[in-house]
Length: 207
Image (cartoon, rainbow, N blue to C red):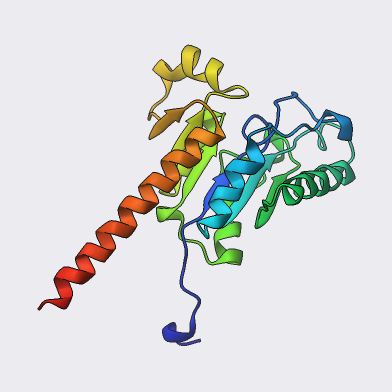
């Protein structure tokens, strides 16, 4: 297909699930244990209004560990989407890895397989995208493909940051309280980029 007909790549926001969108429960081994943070839907809705694709990427090794059936993941994600929809929010894609590390798969975070798959399927530009998570493994995954990284202190985030950050080979680009604060940061940066592009266009139009 000629380059002129290919779909232009877009920046996206990649969100971890447990501890970022929803309460960190260890293993969500029953539908009743999945609880979205009260602020998550409003935060995601703001990203929707900014026309940013929202992609959820989550490790769910409880399947490989036989803690719960893979069908439960689908049930949880249907519940998540329904609760978000009831608040006027949506996610544009959900990717999960059901494996443990010993399976040597290409999708388990911090390997960036899920990011790369989403980028192919949704025409996303990873280098201009943002990843938000409460886990450092996710942060390093995003950094490995050029994403801007935001660590949230919800879920495991505060403990990871306070007790382990001295050992991290590379720090997150930003550390914020929760998903709401992360969205504030993302949308503020997008406005700044938009203004920069507009100013560049105006300067160029005078030539």
